[in-house]
Length: 338
Ligand SMILES: NC(=O)C1=CN([C@@H]2O[C@H](COP(=O)(O)OP(=O)(O)OC[C@H]3O[C@@H](n4cnc5c(N)ncnc54)[C@H](O)[C@@H]3O)[C@@H](O)[C@H]2O)C=CC1
Ligand SMILES: O=C([O-])CC(=O)C(=O)O
Image 1 (spheres, protein in one colour):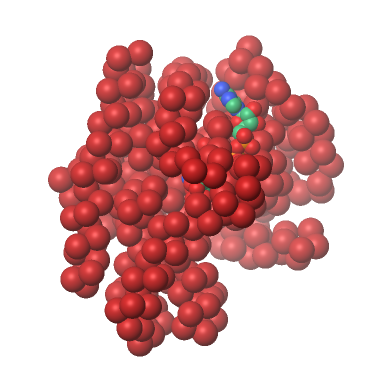
Image 2 (image 1 turned 30 degrees about the vertical axis):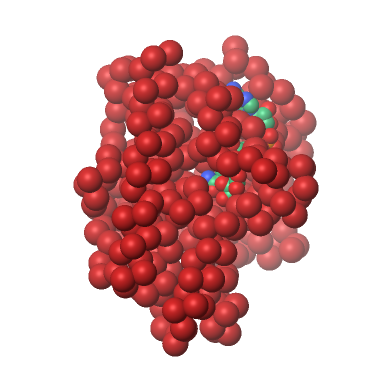
């Protein structure tokens, strides 16, 4: 897609209520900016007129990405930071921290197989966030999200900076997929489709609520089952197609940019910004759970309940709880043991 088209698309989405010059100053950092997700996500954040300072951090490779992206003639000033000694500068004064740092899956792996490497990365980045930008909104992309979000929460609690309204597991790609697959099957305009996706972000913990999808479609139980499975296995579909070269990067960058844009709109006081996200929750007995949340000046303004579920969804909800509970507990245990 041509840059001008993308820019006008993003600015139409983003600037509700603000021209870019009137929008408040906002610093956004991408941690893991030189990676498969990080690079296109940095591009998309550079196109977002709500961003005034774009900070790109990675352990290596960020100067090149930053130099490249910085030539784009949009509002934000771009700076690249490479290596741990520059992490503090990258984070200082940030309003939104987006974290796609960590290893991706290869065929045959589950997201939980990434825990051993990514848990440590997320823990050290969270420690730095608590130190350098304790009030920032955090968008956690690194997998396994079901565990990395609880890890960040524990790190922030220990540092005395935890604000449950500001920590988000990014599950937007599940919603993006559910919308795409539903629209394709129903043969309706995807731009008009809405599908909440709740639970977590791995396999059966991803629970799309097609009974609440709009516009409504008359699908058979078999169709709903197949759409649910395809949504749950969407990540694996990409991992297998990439055959060892990583997992979803482009669709994830799109989803991550959408979610960060929603957070920025919320911060800027745009009303009725609602997205699904994995957050601290009392919607079920689990301490973290993805559901629709309203975003505002303080991050999460309201966590919405699940609404009415079909019998199939009720079964899915009960089935996902043990796995999600154990992934959450694994994260909490790791953060407190190390
Ligand atoms: N939440 C979601 O829906 C999705 C999550 N993911 C996850 O996102 C993560 C990143 O995926 P890719 O970009 O494809 O991987 P990648 O390997 O292409 O990029 C990861 C980047 O993180 C950097 N990195 C490693 N340690 C770091 C540290 N301590 N600080 C800063 N940067 C560090 C690497 O240098 C690399 O540039 C993976 O864990 C993947 O599973 C991927 C797709 C969807
Ligand atoms: O499947 C993976 O490993 C990456 C991911 O989270 C997704 O694409 O949903």
